[in-house]
Length: 150
Image 1 (cartoon, helix red, strand yellow):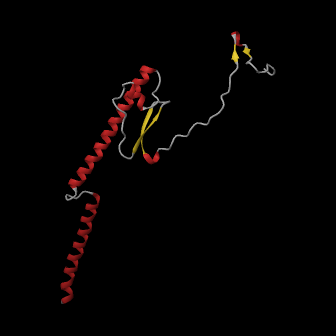
Image 2 (cartoon, rainbow, N blue to C red; image 1 turned 60 degrees about the vertical axis):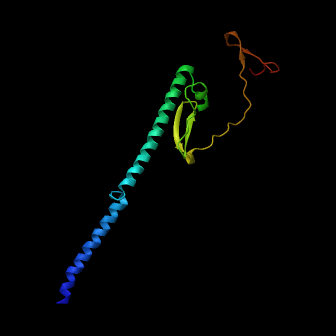
Image 3 (cartoon, rainbow, N blue to C red; image 1 turned 45 degrees about the horizontal axis):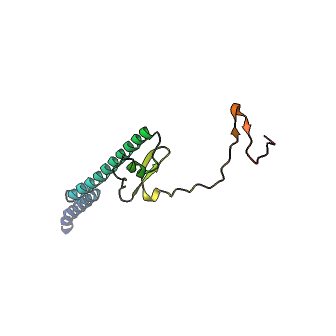
C-alpha cells in the first residue's frame, strides 16, 4: 500500500519542477514583472540615443545642403560649416561612434570607431604638363622642349 501513496507525491513534484523552468524562461526574456522597471529604463536610454543620433544627422545634412546651394560645392569639413555660420558648433558623435564625411559627395555617415579606417595619404607624383594650345588648337612647344615627335 505504501507504493500507491508515493505516486501522487511524485506527480506533484514533477509538476512543480515544470513550473519552475517556465518561470525562469520568462525572466530570461525580460517579460517578468520584477525586471519590468529596468527593461523600461533601458528602452528609454536606447530611444534617447537613437533620437539624438537622428537629430544630429538631420541637422548636418541640412547644413551641408544649404552650404552646397550657396557655395556651389560641398564643404571640406565640419569646421568650414561652423566658420561660415551654417552650424553653431562642430557636431560631437555619440560615445564609441565617429562621423565620416565625404567632401566630394557631401554624404555623412555615423559609424562605430572600430569600423572607421584612417585615410590613406595620396601618393606624391610629378604633375604631367599638358601641351599649350594656341588659336585653332595648334600646339605651342614649351621652352626647352624639342618639337620633334609632335
